[in-house]
Length: 273
Ligand code: PGA
Image (cartoon, rainbow, N blue to C red):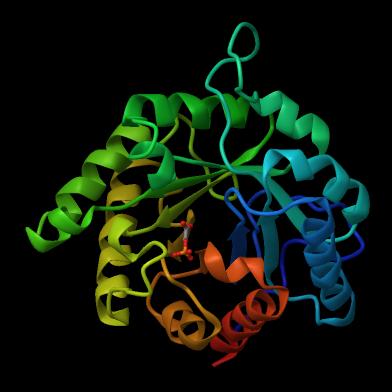
């Protein structure tokens, strides 16, 4: 059964009563892609489809920072969530090039990704910094998508659960509650490679993450869990049918509105099955 709670089309794009992010949760991470013309066109194509679709599920996009303001203007009160790709752990001040969580809220964002592997590995961000960013985001009123995931080497060495445990314990923000914190499992070796774990492995890993969350936080059973890494229209349905997978975080395939919409549809269909 698909839950019909959550973000309604006519209401402002927010997580509603905070306990109720409607499944499936499908979020597009555009990374460093998009100029004004193609970014706006993509956002408009999604808004157009949302306006004609049944009110099921949660769809969101995380465009580059330069596109947040123009896209927020176009979205208005319609139910497409807008998010940042990263934020500073600091509130304000002399941090050249950084963007604070309050700035993201101010421009119309409802959520922010923290701990993405391209930040952890490309920018040397460790668990403590990721946690500080997540806490700054929560304080500024943003909901958080916390990314975790093992490298190929760790995966091959059978160290996946050990690495995930360390990342969860080290970067889960204090006061993580359902509806405000989403955990995204993204194996580093699956990002942008066209390779994914089997759905059995994804289900197993998510069950492990769920158990750790239940140990660590009061609402651990209710936190949303997403999978990310080479999600496409053709594999999205089976991935979202796996146990404890409540949605997906999509990189490359979110740059094509048709493909991204097909992923969302596949998730909705998998919830009905
Ligand atoms: P991908 O990226 O879908 O291009 O593999 C996923 C991500 O980095 O979130």
